[in-house]
Length: 602
Image (cartoon, rainbow, N blue to C red; front, side, top):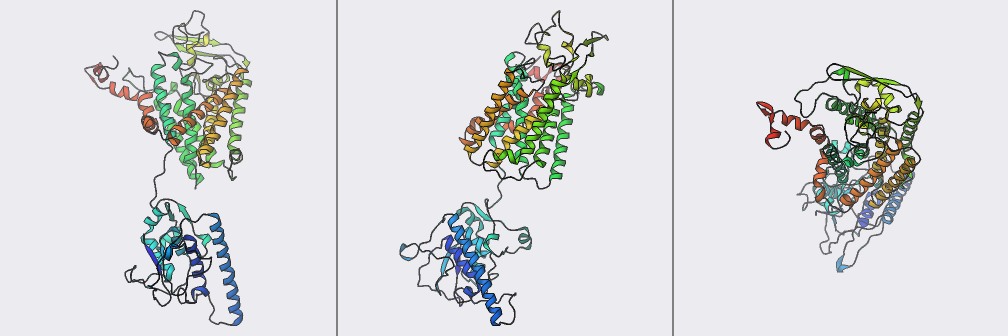
């Protein structure tokens, strides 16, 4: 590590004395004295130069006034150093001759003619930038005979800090000095008057890449894997398939988990928003891209794994889907995170309610509005048509005429979608086709019973407009879990503030389900929202403890990779783009494709 040498005014060295390292407190006191024109001009550190602001005349009145101002300024600096010494423990002490520890009183300089060797530590870098008026000094040993800019001990310290900045930062725990943009542009040291104006940042010498939250990637990867398992094995294992209507299965947690993860990710992405309008513009563009991708993948453009044809009739194109719902929730949650933040400080978990009270209010309004519409909206009778064998068309009529019905036929969610989107733009394979009323093979798909109700074949979109309102609430809940990451650095604080709302939401969800507000994924009821969000919080907390706290990284590497490439895997595998692409290469007959060659499929 470089050594900066402080010399007296005539450049003489006292070579008979032992050199000792100064502590950071001693360096601070030394430079406060050096900053004092009276002290620096008394022969201890160098001959004083008259500051440009001093008047040409030196009358007794002006001299007394200047001395009073200098004394006040020095006293302020001494109080600041005393405060810093009490606030932070001394990081290191110097050793003088005989091994005794040498300490300097605040504001007391070294003896006349004494020479000391000062380590190029962050404190020296910090203090060397102070505005110290000194006589130019040439350090022939360390500066190669060149005159140091600005002169004196401050210049020597600055020169060595510039040369040895990386080593000093590494030795002192990774601290480095942050220079202002103006100083960086000027290419000169950023000299500031007063120690309170200097800025130290806990950053490495070179900017490190922003670290990812590994547990979040693992959680996303587990959700992607669960989605693939549900899509492939759900037809054989009813426990892995979606619930036909009321109730929960493992598959019903996939969508809320994705929305929860989106909320947590948004918090980390918008932790600092320098330009809110620009951030909003980018969020809108991302949401539009995701929505359009969903239209292509789930709008009916591709006709299935076993078909090599593609194209869609725009009059019958499905408008909503998984990616479309995520895009809507992402956009609303991003706007809330960009614009609806308070200025309150966060010290405890309860402070989060004050800082993000507007976001919580939005979630409360959306939940109340959805519940009122679901149970209070009048649902009239309605009709639909389906294509029969050949070119025949069958018409069905469904009788409703009531309010508060949460069954498959007469719920407000389906009515809103039929009215706004149109029945021809809804999902044509509704999940309730596997109910006991509509399938002989309940809970699997099967032929219609002889007494099947008229609504069994009606289109219904599980990712509809009204149900997407509660999807936004799930994303907002994820935002609040992300805020805990931002405002709490200790693992214990994060875990406690995650577990408390998770268990609370689960308990409230089961109470609601018990009193009649059933958990229902197609309707995305409020009890379903709370249950899945609470489960997501518990699972995320467990993954965080295993991966980020205890460091179990190796077993979760595959999940971490899948989490980093979740959208690509979803497009290629879950949307069957990769199987269709592979099936497109065949030998003379479409049945003789690559999948058959490797033993997969017919």
